[in-house]
Image (cartoon, rainbow, N blue to C red):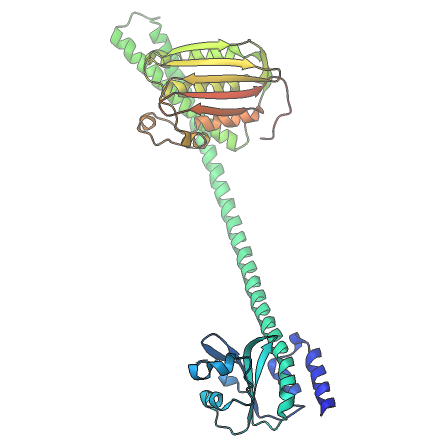
Length: 410
């Protein structure tokens, strides 16, 4: 008998989990002793579940554990072969011949096996069950891994399908975005021509080249000119952001004196300054040559100065300060306007950013000016920052390299 037990034990230990079902394990056990049916119950906190059985219709059945037998099931000191009558009644088995043995790993009982109509030797059943405890646990883990693997495979397939869907949608979005940018660029370009004519002819009328005008007429012409300049600025912003996002803007760099774009921009915006009676001052430490795109630097200054004018009250002050070191030049545009709350300091450089304060909502804006300004500065290898508090004005500081450097990728 002992040789037979050793042989059965060896077969159970060497059996491949992946190749065996629970029935296959018990087919090996049957070589040691006969039994009609087997039932493998796994313990939960308040119930037991029939997990494996030779009677397939019973598998999966869950039964609540009554308090009267809970100690028998969970107590490590109980020998099931001696205390089984209550369990058998609880399980409602009518057979007279059976063996019950616990499933245990180290000191943890996780279930039991019931052999029905068995004529085996009880002293051998503990040794067999000890091995079966590990093999059944391995089988459980193997099933769990298979379920996880199946779930993972399904998740991967769903992710791949979702990726394909997103990729297709992205293509449509990019195509629609391209059409939008082309449309905006086309419309903006067409709008600039009549706006330039409006601003140009208003300049001629204001100069009274073709005859004297009344004060009221001059006032109306001034309004036309200011509105035209503001509208032209908004159109230019829409056109520029479209070009930037399409990577269509290229820098044409050359050396020029930094005072030139500052003076020209100030003269261009003089009607807006006069309308609000804003005092503009310059403070240039040294009029040095800078290697940059002249038009883009002028546009940067235009955006910053027009913003300063827009958010400065009548009779306010704006100061443009230029300082330099060996490698960099700093341009500061400081105003005495309403200022910007610190919580908005990063937001104002985002596309279409609109501030919540009532003062800002009164002013027309695309929300693109500072976004474009930041991008143009970065294309030059520079940086921009803002120093401001609500009610205490704003100071925008631009730092640009003086000499020629490698251009950053657009």
